[in-house]
Length: 100
Image (cartoon, rainbow, N blue to C red; front, top):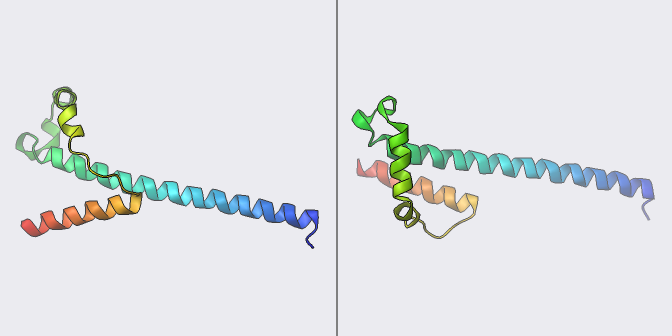
């Protein structure tokens, strides 16, 4: 039977392992979200005047987006976990590249 000290040590090890796993998951989530944000931004910037982000009137863009929030919300689909959503995005990107 394990001693109290051994159990305490094991508890600390497990807590450290849990914290590492939480950090890994958060990092993975951030990476996937950042990719999605870049793709969404690319869609917007492709329609910028001359395709140049430096010529965007950010107040006008923000007002346009706010004025079309319901239409943007209608673009939603079934939510997936991070891996599934990333896969769906990458498949969409691949299909778009093949169209060109």
